[in-house]
Length: 405
Image (cartoon, rainbow, N blue to C red):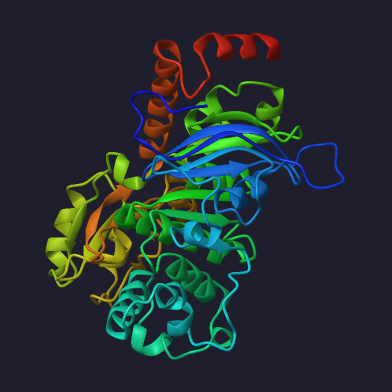
C-alpha cells in the first residue's frame, strides 16, 4: 500500500515482508507492504497474535524476515549489519527496559556512548533530552530507575530512544503498562513532543482508541496476519473496508472522531473575562453585559483563576478570593476528546484553553465540539467522493458499504 502522490516521502518502505517461524506452516506476518511517510506516526493495531509486533521488530531486524524487503531513507537495509541499522532507529518497549544498575543519565547515554561521542557532547544531549521530556536534569539525572514512577520511567525510555537523534522511532505498546490517567497524560505529552521533534514513528498498540488518538495513519492487521486496511483515522471510522475493520473500530464513531482533532485546530468560543483585582462594581457591570452566568477572572499574566457569579458578587462578605476555582484547563495540543472529559468536570460546562505559559486563549464548549464533529463528517464524505486513499478506492468503499447493508 504505497503512499499517494500528495503524501510526504516514505521514510520506511516494506515490500512483501513475510515471517515464518520454524515449525509453523502459517506465517506470523504475511506479505506486508506499506509506505511509512517521513515525520508521521503510523500505528499498527490488531488482535493478539495478528503480527503487528513481529512487523515492528522486523523493521530494525530484532526479528529477521523470512522474505521481503525493508528500505530506510531509500536504502535497502534488508541485509545490512543489524547493529548498524539499530543505531539509526530508536526503540521504546512497554516495560521500558532501563538498566537498573545505571543512573537515568547513564541509561539515556547508552547509544551515544556506543557511537563514541565525547563526554561533553553526551552530557549536553542527556540534559537536553531530560528537559524535553519535562524532567529536571539535576534532579533526575543521578537517580536510578527504581526511584522513579512508572510514568517517569516511560519518559526516560523515550528520551533514551531519541539520544542519538535517530530519524525513526519504534514504539511497542509504550503506554500499555501504565494506569489510565497517567497514560492519557503521557499520550498528550508525547503528541506535544512530536510537534517539536517530527520523528517518523511506528507505534504498536492493541487499543483502537489509542491508535485513533495517536496515529496520522493506522494499519489494521487481521487474524490472517495481513493488513486489512491502511488509512487515516477519519477514513477508518467513516469507511471501514470490510466487516473485520468495521467490527474492530467498534461503535461510537462520533465520539471516536473527537480524538481526531486537536483543540488548536478548532475555533474557540470566547468568554467574558475580567482582571481578578477589579472593583466589585466593575465585575457586576461586566457580568450584567453578558448572557453568561459566570465571569472568568484572570491574574496579571492572563492566567485563569476563578469563576464568579452574580450571587458571589452580591455576598456581603465578598472578597477577591470568592467564586469557584478554575479546574477544567487544557492546552491546544490535546484532543477534543480530552477537552470533553475536562468539560464534564467543569463548574460551568466548558474547558478553558491556555497556552504554554498558562495564559487564557478561549474556551471549548458543546457547540465547539458539535461543529468540529459535523465538519469532520463532511470532510471525510468529500474525501471519499473525490479521491482514492492509500490503496482504498472509492469503488472499494462502495462495495464494502453495500456488503454491510
